Amino acid sequence: MADSWINGELLAFDLETTGVDKAVDVPVSYALVWFVGQEPVRQDAGLIDPGREIPPGASAVHGISTQRAREEGVDLEQGVRHIVDALLDASRRDVPVVGFNLAYDLSMMDARLRALDGVGLVDVGWHGPVLDPLVMDRNLERFRKGKKTLDLVCSRYGVVNDAAHDASGDAIASTKVLFAMAGEFPQQLAEVDAKTLTARQVAWHRTWAEGMHQFLTSKGGRGFEPDDFDWPLAGGHAKAVIER
Image 1 (cartoon, rainbow, N blue to C red):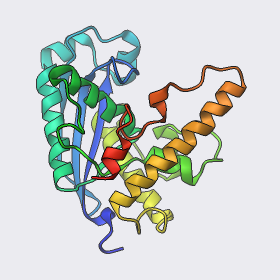
Image 2 (image 1 turned 135 degrees about the vertical axis):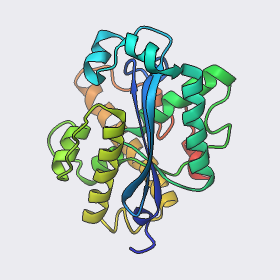
Image 3 (image 1 turned 30 degrees about the horizontal axis):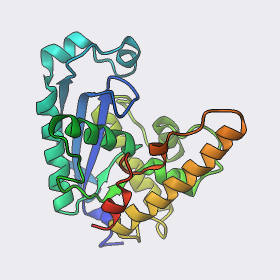
Image 4 (image 1 turned 90 degrees about the vertical axis):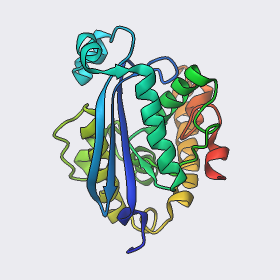
């Protein structure tokens, strides 16, 4: 596996936000951590002023208050453009972006860019590749009990996250989980190139979403919204990502 993506450059990415709606909520902090040879070599992280009140429930999770974000954070537009620039640079160089439940973070950035410029990530040239330990774990160990949170998956792979719900801590922990998974499932992960693995994750996510939707509706639940079947971006951009 000397030439595997696990030994190349990766960009770990995570957001802390005002809430859980990827189309409406906005980031309040970000982390971009570059890995080379499975080691972090550079980190860029900071606070973002969301331009709105941060709900108490969200602050209770990540510890960022509205006052702190206003005093220490960069302007929302500045923060969004800074993150998008990093994602575009990685994509141009075919550097995989890594994160846990990346469809949420990437779709939020896509929505914020659309709010600013009327165009999304794919429109400005972003095309992955993407490596998401959540999507991989759902496929590789689909019958393991317990909700597949980052905390639970860290525990499964022996990864300690000393800064849970901090963007930098979660970005680094997610990447360490990815390395551990690749070591345990080399044929399915480490021995597959990042572009092919991105395409496979699109299919893995849809299979999971269809099964979960069927389960929820069979129990009388509401089921998934149409864009919940999309990965890694809401809005049906999977084909544009995997064919570039």
